[in-house]
Image (cartoon, rainbow, N blue to C red):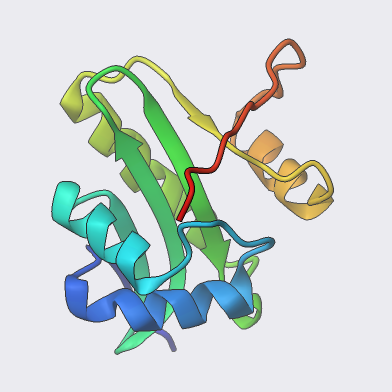
Length: 141
């Protein structure tokens, strides 16, 4: 039997979160480093929600709220823990957070090639919006 609980990430979790994402998340981000995770937690300590089994991170979602938009990133579940409802539990926690903060809707960034994730988001009630595209510009280092 597993005893999964959801909790906010803490600064001491940063290295473990990065290792978890390397194993469980699709793709990488320019912010996937200790500085990026630490800055997120300093700015919004409740944004990174973890599913943990004992001391082991088995799921995550970033529920980013800027006062205007509710955005979801890094929804991931350890492969051996998938198909147990962890994504749904993480999304429910994120959606409850957004509702409590005054959010009216949330959106998620999903890699175009990640078909498994697209199915998971659709089964959670999210719809793809074809009229939007993401535009990015990295800052010089």
